[in-house]
Length: 378
Image 1 (cartoon, rainbow, N blue to C red):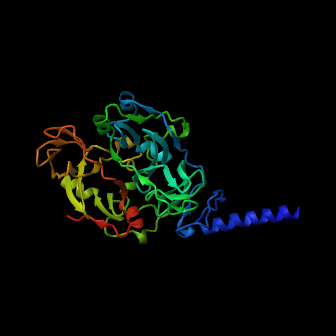
Image 2: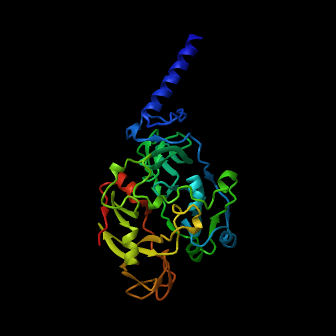
Image 3: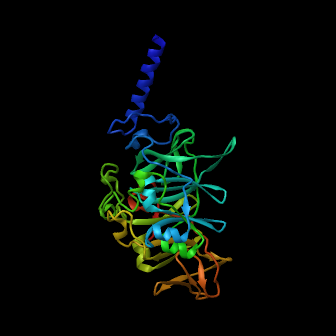
């Protein structure tokens, strides 16, 4: 009896100790099984916001085709678009806001589709890891924790904590393991189905009845018009002043270095041709998509447009692009291109620019994790 009592006391002490190490203002019970000894950051940087299991994860969701999708969603809605081997799927941000994570498969590849509304970070990763014991496929969910206002994910196998914005393990068995980004685009429902008429979009009939009632509704009213992110989750004194905190940006990477481009600059120019290190890229901007973080009724939200990023080298030739009267064209052949990087008219018709791996964020979040990022300046 004494032995059991001692173990119970030790267990309660351990739970209390771990809970105290994390930033846990609401004193939630520590029910995570994470190996907190194996970590690369101080536990105090992580804030426990909700109990584990608070977000219902979309595991292998149901999809519908174009006609049904256009009845469920309005054309200006933002989606994360992923295409592998000619097969395309779309994940609406208004649905991901309620779930934040989807574990899915596309053409035999296990994909992890993530969206953190507080940081406006939409990123897709490969769920398959190569380890010393072979390949393994992980499933993820939202942990209920935040760091720098960004979602902390956990894998269900080891409950390692992963930083959503960077795709890296930060506490647990997979500490410092890096997930591989799968190239994706954030575009409108309309542009997705123009480019991929055979593509599919997640059905609103997900089976999560409480969540279904709120699809199309934004619970972060006017969040993207605030000067700074929510003070509860991010200290405004730590905001990098080089860009407005809530400026939308896209990032690109080369050999561990990063460069970011503000939506404001890309929208102003329409097209940006640039070289980062040895990488030639082009960024397209097009209006016609609405914010999911503006009005409570997303369909009435402001137009923020889409920014997409591509490698500008095609068949070993660097192309230069311009935009005139809302049409993208390359200066060499005058061929016309769309926001997804496909040529639809001219000498290069049918060609596809290679998507440059990138993701969308609010500037405050990206720069909190990557303060050494180069910032594009006109």
